[in-house]
Length: 85
Image (tube, rainbow, N blue to C red):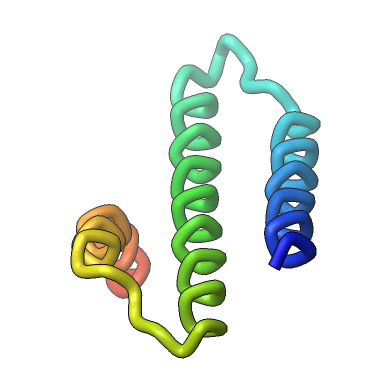
């Protein structure tokens, strides 16, 4: 169990390093920082829900009702946006 959590944490740390090494937004592009922040936030939420879902499924269980509601609320806007594309 500890190995799984260490791997998940290591993956999150690696993602943080990669996103921190991204090119900073220029002053002439004020929305650049907002877009990068939104993408990183969505990615972090998706990874968190995926890791939790995998760990719960590994125990042959279902996520709690509260967790499922939070996942639906947080991922609904990006689902609607990307399905439209």
